[in-house]
Length: 523
Image (cartoon, helix red, strand yellow):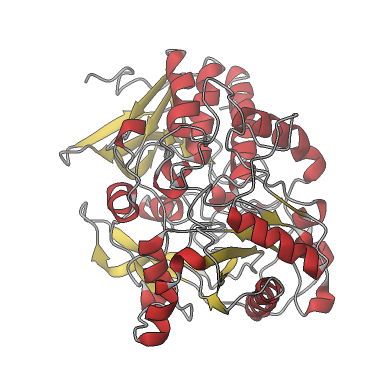
């Protein structure tokens, strides 16, 4: 298929990645009349391609390119080649995500001011706040069809949620409900309501769950201003003699290297591949990589404090029926250092499917204790803990000194050490989750270690001052005015909430800014 936009057309905006950030940004720019090319490393799978098969879809859509890990996190031992569970396909991880769509709280934008100096933590206030974000949050919620906003009703509660709700009531929690979820609870936006199939992580066959693949991107393509090129793996970003980015070099499915000229480049490859691309795009003018005068590219990697608690009961629960994430308790997301840690966490019902439960319940375990737990799978209820982890400069994405990928470029190494605050928060979550299930008659409880990361954040952090980060409050790099970052890597801190709503809100806000600056010829 011939390119819609000429490779030598230097008036286009090139967006690298098609997930929550890149897919939303590209569509929104197109609807504003801006010619946009999205380069996506993975294939394009449509809804009929989705299968309700956990392992089959994992192999089909996951980012399985070679990576290495280091640090004291258990993942480095258990899943050294898969530190993150992300998608390599059009739509990115909006195919895989569960739909939870929560706003940051006011204080979470100013944690340096509130928390103070915490040894080992590289805290920084965001260069923007909740008041500035509120209209963009509202726009994103309406765009995504987030339940319990804009008059959209909540989803029904599954058995997994009903157990959580009863336990939450027993523990005195006040804020437990079935959302806010970007999953249609009633027909909306040309898509039907959720059928409660339960395979949310494998691609939503009913299209009830919001995804850039079948919601945002088709709207952008319909304008005639958006071209999506799948199987286009970006190798480097080039710049002119003045230091402005000028083109993107990518490899197509056959491995052929192609150069697309650009007026503006927006990187939305996730918190591992985005800094890796900047570092691999070094030159004599930018010897340490693009946009890296601060030395902060790749640093301050965050993955959220996570862990899970599962419990077995005398009677069947069948937690796999219904949405993967069926309910949320937000009471512990408050700032309350009397618990032994700063920041807070969410408690979210979760069912990851039998194959992944076998892999993640206790990686490497075998014997009667493990097998007896798996025998009770249909009697299980489960929750995921999601909390604010501390940014640390030493937690970082770096280029491997000897290992290269299929294009001859250094692969990323993902280094992560838990901060003592993360450990204290996780242990508190294990205690509260176990107490919740015990209060409703659990036979056994299973505190479960973190899975390979799905909430990858930081590594190209926002900052008011160029010396402290990589981008300004618009996601525009401090060093290069026509180079933007458009994914979760711009997060200054992680907050307690699932990140997708904030990524989409920032992308909508960024699209408005880019279109305005282009019309003024500032970029």
